Image 1 (cartoon, rainbow, N blue to C red):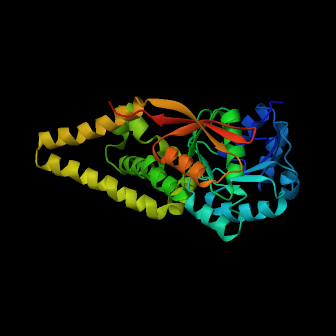
Image 2 (cartoon, one colour):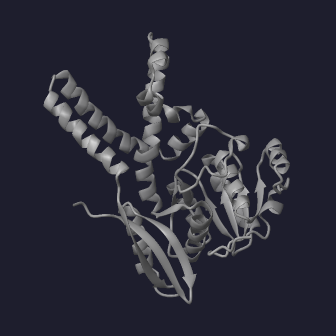
Image 3 (cartoon, rainbow, N blue to C red):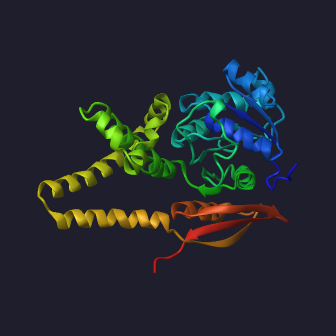
Length: 339
């Protein structure tokens, strides 16, 4: 077994669809003692056929675990968190992989679980669903949001060390609200746009001709429309306010494009698309600079927390978290200053 920098060696995954199943397979591949659990009996049987421990009862699956990943549907996560918190030991690190963070973080706070629960979101996925679609490599090198708090900073450190070590993740520390605003533009609104484009073509008289001509732009632009519909609706509804706010930003820009097109204003179109092109090129060519920062493990947490949240807000991430000799050392990466 590979030694875990965070000391988390016994894991459980509750909810083993595409993401949960992929988490489970990678943890097993890395040599952790891992159990799975799913409310669906057929899924549990499939997991057992793969040689993974899948107890029929949830208490058995989470008993004596160091970390539990909650991976079920967003709408069920609050009650799953409450149930698992009552079954797992007090030292167990609890985290989730849901694509919205504000609701589950507020629920955890209301039930006194902030110190035990680290909200999380690995930014990866696929259009497929279910344990059969799981892939141990799905989350490799993913940007993995983790939401640190003053009360749960020790849990954050342990979990960050684990996901970096096992998944090669780029840990992005963020507040739940910052995550939800950024994820609305980075992930949730693109689902609306993809669904709109695919839906418009589905109802168009030239539908079949479009499918015959479809190349990279249409395929890329509608890719996430292949996500199971119920999963997409759950995600959008759980981040409704942020999605609607950010959608207004996108439609405002689209209105500017449409106005320039109606007016035959080539200069305005070029200007708008130049801004968009520069953003796209920045995404493809981002350069980040690594640097270590150290903090006393038992010192005041305000400075450490400010460093972590500032790193995420600036578009940076962590690729290391090591605790030794009373000191925590982070390896952070920040975007290089523009020339």
